[in-house]
Length: 221
Image 1: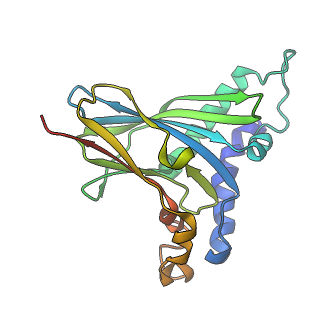
Image 2: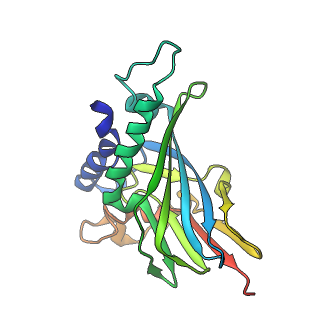
């Protein structure tokens, strides 16, 4: 089925095109508005992220091109459910575009679960929601970034960082802060290595310069 490959095309094909191009030509072609729910355990450790993506209107139309609506003018939920599951499988190969760290070290991710897709008829936008657990819950402070390494896709919180909330679990004396880079300023201050083909910054790491960083911090006690 065609819808089974759309997210693969979203990240894999554009990434190959990007790596073959010059970094100066790199800019987003797909935009995702993101929301994230924080899930903690009884010890206030980060247990999982509930990630919600809303794709731009143009890409949403492309993703569902060829899929027929039902007699009520809606995309069948069964099709959307299958779409979400396939996308989760494909996203595993890129760690779900998610990097969670503590003390500067990456934390291992478990298998993502509970995928959901929906269609907003009024906005003409497709959504994808899934839960991404850590293999082992980790105490704060913990940081996470969710971004496309090639920067073909812009994934960010709307309204300068607003879009993260505590979803489940105790979070007494915990807070979330978000640092969102100024895109124009980032371009002006990119290191010279970002514009050469001999550095890991190009391709896999280029988008990291533009990624928002969220920090979960909790007071002891």
